[in-house]
Every structure is written in structure tokens, then in C-alpha cells.
Length: 139
Image (tube, rainbow, N blue to C red; front, side, top):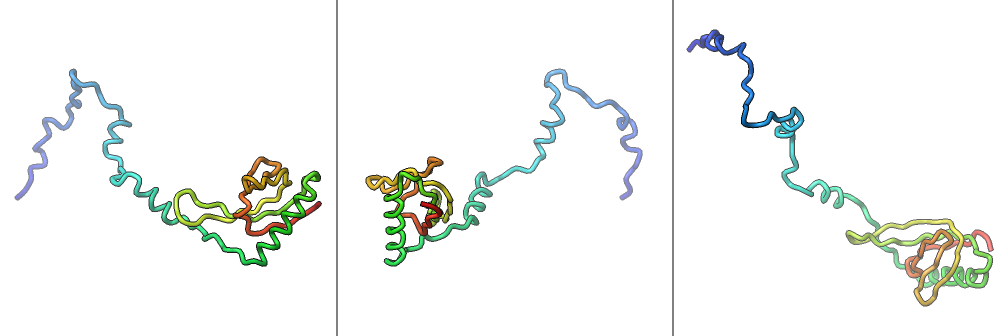
């Protein structure tokens, strides 16, 4: 079956009809109709969250606990001097199992035995039970 190539010659050069009832859609809005969309809202975010790695909290043996307790005792004795320390501690993840270890170098402002925290000069609070390692830089 052969198509007649001159079938639409009478309308091919006519101007496009513009409605008097409906306002003309902007080019951006027309393009948005054909843009890809996320059929599963939040799916990509969940995949990224699942891929994010966390670390298990390490249990300290009695030797490590004793080293930390001795360091804390030396800090308490010299708290007036605001000793400079390097602390590695665990921060639990708010969304899933595990967390991460952070190392900070800062001056100790206060050790609160009631709250079981160390208050640093930058305002950070570290839970004593989350400390993995502590080194005194200067006393």
C-alpha cells in the first residue's frame, strides 16, 4: 500500500490553533509533563541508607577499662589546668544498628560523674561509657 505524500499539503503550513478558552501552558510546564518521575517515592533514599556502613561498638576488656579509668582519674586531679586530651569514642547511629568512632583533640572542662559525661571546652559532651581510648596530651 503506497501512501500519498501530498495527503496533508492543505494543512501543513497552517498556523497552530490557540484556544480562547484555556490559557496557554508554558514551555516549562509542558516539558514537566514528559519528565521522568520517581514512581517509588523514598525508594532511592532507603537504598542510600541501607548502603551506609556502620560499625559495631567494641567491648572493652578489663585492661582497657583500667587504662581509661586511670586516665580519667589523672584528668580529675588536674581539671583546673583544663588538660588537653585525645579521645576516641563511639557515637550510636540514630537510624540503624551500630554507629561510628570519632576521635577529638580538645581541652577537658569538666567531668560530671552524676551524668557520667565529659564536658569539653568546645561544648561537646562525651558519655564516659562510650570512650574507647583516651590519651592525655598535656597536664
